[in-house]
Image (cartoon, rainbow, N blue to C red; front, side, top):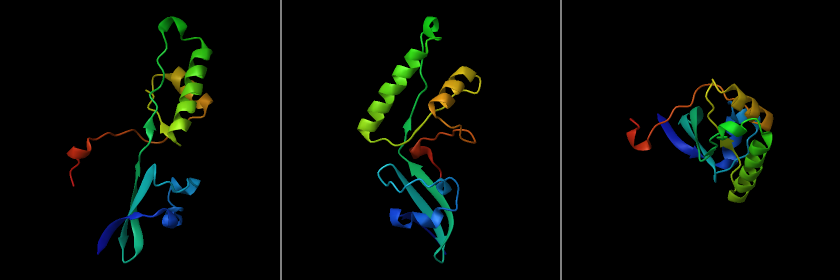
Length: 127
């Protein structure tokens, strides 16, 4: 019989072989949780629920877009605020046609994730 449960931080080693958990992200039930499906005690599936912050890439005045100091200051202030709020990870969505924004994000340390972002209103989920 298949059952599902939240995997406590003390048991996260049980999913360390599954990407992206193999990267060594530390257990942090304050910001994300892992739920597992089990069959007779064997983990046969998992899903992660993240309370991450969406970093909406910067807007720059058209006449000032060549000034890197603007982005640098926005990033510096963002990092300060995120640290104050205790946020460990952020994600950003950058249109594939915005090559300059992608380059700046990569230079700042963002890593492009595979796939595409999908959104849903929780109340609209069909189970």
